[in-house]
Length: 190
Image 1 (cartoon, rainbow, N blue to C red):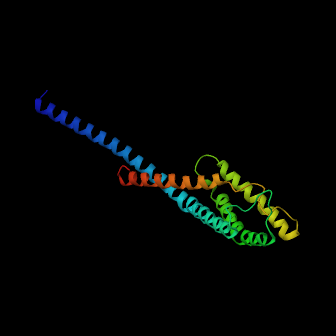
Image 2 (cartoon, rainbow, N blue to C red; image 1 turned 180 degrees about the vertical axis):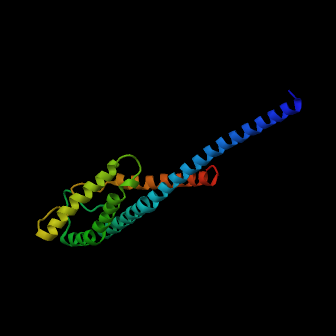
Image 3 (spheres, rainbow, N blue to C red; image 1 turned 60 degrees about the vertical axis):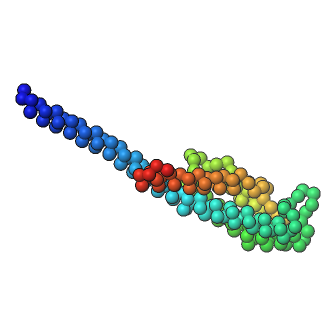
């Protein structure tokens, strides 16, 4: 075989091999980028449609509760051995109707309409605890308003502080993931 032809054949084989390797590597990189873009889009929906609004409502509720406790001059509302005075009860019921119950309803509406955006493969226990808290309170409070049936002026289940913690932590993890994925999409390792 002619050495010139053999050199050309080797050069063509190396070139074709390089092109194939480059094509395979480029295709893999493009697939990873598209997967990162899809994941980034989902994370952004989670933040925009569920966790951002939830975080705001949780923080706003925490602030409102502290404001209410400041009005009472203590850091709690109810104790088993000390019922609310009539003035405190009137104040509490005003805040329930105009501050706490509407916010809890907004949280419940978010959770029920955006369940597909919840982090994980199941509803977290703290979210279920919030639902128990809200539903037991809403129904008994509504029954008192509509039928005059007295109740203890609060939910049968305490506000789940683990719900607040989980919302805040999930928001933080999603923000970090958003930054990492945005870096991958732009081709910059975060």
